[in-house]
Length: 96
Image 1 (cartoon, rainbow, N blue to C red):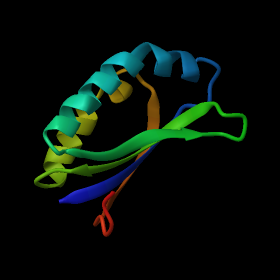
Image 2 (cartoon, one colour):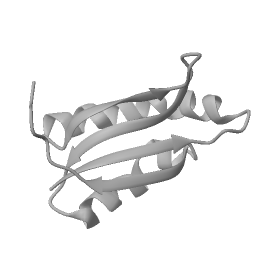
Image 3 (cartoon, rainbow, N blue to C red):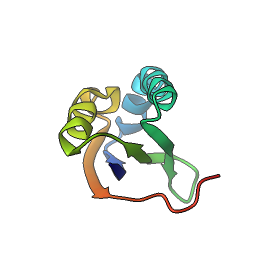
């Protein structure tokens, strides 16, 4: 089942520092997910000044429970980067 995940970073002064600290392990995990066809699309949300403020991902998991398990263990979750996460069922209509 496909989902779109919109995760917003904290807005405190240490938010970007937490993101950068967890980024390498988060990206490594995303590459592994891509190899297993779980990560369909991912990227950082930016503010008007080009600063990273969150993430948007389209993922494919067997069910919501599997998605929640991944979210719980992602370095951006465990590292306190994402402060709010919105998940919606999704269906990719056009693939590149």
